Image 1: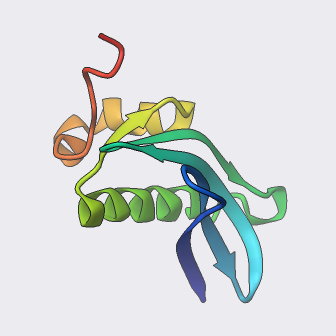
Image 2 (image 1 turned 180 degrees about the vertical axis):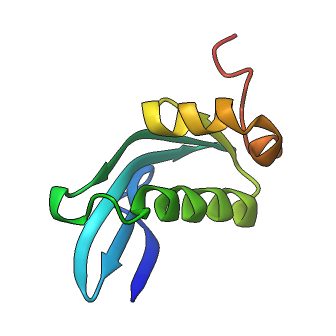
Length: 100
């Protein structure tokens, strides 16, 4: 069974972690500052690739942003690609003006 959780190490930096059968299978590196949630990197460990785990991490990231009323800055190539492919799905959490 897959479980995802958001863990912060200190004030701003943390991870969205994915566990399957009590083994860490992947993570997203994130930082929360003010009302922004920046995602830097998504990683699914090689032995767990091909199971849709990156999507599970993305789903948890988005639900966390909604819970905390945060906008996501998608610096991670995977998240950025998903936001661009499905802009309507992520419109309510996507910070599109962060670079201005």
